[in-house]
Length: 97
Image 1 (spheres, rainbow, N blue to C red):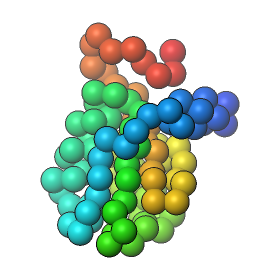
Image 2 (image 1 turned 45 degrees about the vertical axis):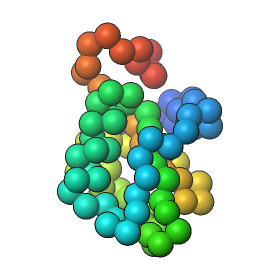
Image 3 (image 1 turned 180 degrees about the vertical axis):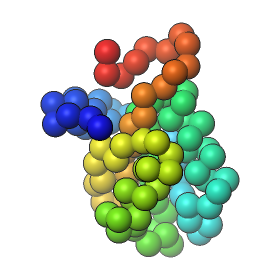
Image 4 (image 1 turned 45 degrees about the horizontal axis):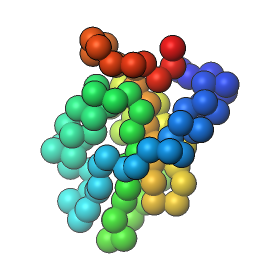
């Protein structure tokens, strides 16, 4: 669980990154979840963009997805979702260090 201070820092960092995952008409399929998990492993902090034809997730659905991925929902802004997950990948600069 991330603290309030960490969440503030992550939101600040997320404002400068571009979405790395775009969710289309398939929604959050298994393939999309695998891609999200891979991006979290490689970058720790990612931004997901929902296309217009995808209905936004409820807070319950977001939390359920984050738990499934072992990640934290940092924030949602409109059709953008920011996720964080500490990565064990060697050689990357950790976001919360």
